[in-house]
Image (cartoon, rainbow, N blue to C red; front, side, top):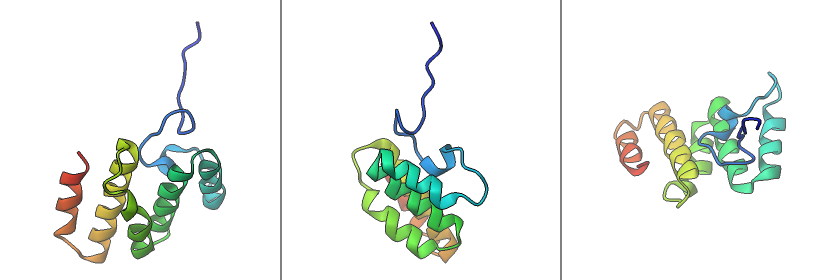
Length: 103
């Protein structure tokens, strides 16, 4: 029996954009593909894209609604994105709150 492989489409993984295989320069296409299969993962992928583009405020705003989500992949992703965005913005106390919330 062949070994089954999983992807962000079959199983929610944290940080879906990082987990996706995308060609350089095709960030928006990767986000669109993720969102086409799972709207919530697409929103997290959009938050990741904001962060990678040097838009920490937008990244935080896009990820923040998922900070207390019941799905661990979405919650962990949101907490990572918000923590890194806060560090980028100089909010040194906030990442500690995100780290404890990610559990």
